[in-house]
Amino acid sequence: MNFSHFDNRTLPVLIGLIVTLSILVPHRPRAFAGQDQNAVSAIPSWIEKEQWREDDIRVVVLRTEGFLLQSHATMALVDLVRKKVREEIDLLVHNGASEMVSLPESYVEANLVKDELILDSRQLNPSFAGREKYYGFAKLHFSAAFRSMIEDRYQRNFRTGRLTWTGVLTATVLGWLAVVWAYLRLDQMTRHFYSRRLQTGAIVLAVVILAVAIIALLSLDQIWHDPPG
Image 1 (cartoon, helix red, strand yellow):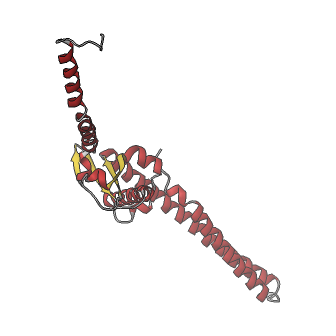
Image 2 (cartoon, rainbow, N blue to C red):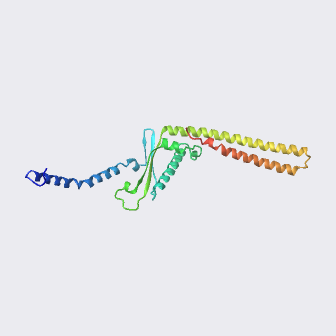
Image 3 (cartoon, rainbow, N blue to C red):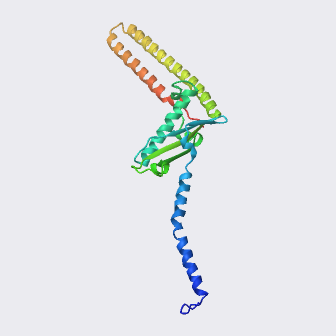
């Protein structure tokens, strides 16, 4: 096209191009605004709920308070999930049952936590104008299979713990009886010449037996709280 010469057909085409560009350019910010609205609408609706049922699954939503740092909100969400799982175990069995059933973090994340996210104040409320804070959200599923597993695990760990306590206490009592018998036997053989020394030795042995029993109970504690495979 030779721009040094305009005819009656060239000029309307140029004017049309200019008008078209002037109309399209102002619409670009609106397109980006539409994308922002889509991002806000992408926030899952479950964060506004507390709990509900889906067939045999009880769904619970957890929400942390606001934190100035995202890392603090994340840590608070982890602690909140742990607390809720312990409360659920106590609710399923009885108060304090969570002390007998320990669930590893990997099991909780893989089987109970179905969704979790950290949102800031502006994501939750686009018109928010204050100091930005971060909130943690988690959606937990407590199914019938989970409830059955917890009850079975508690009963098994309870029986294991009771047998362990019985075995250790029996061994401790037998050890003390053996110490008393040895003291009396040796005291009689020595015609009471070393009674004071034998008494000291017997007391030391009794304390040692008690310490071994306590250590055994503490070391076997993990057996009662073995995590589900």
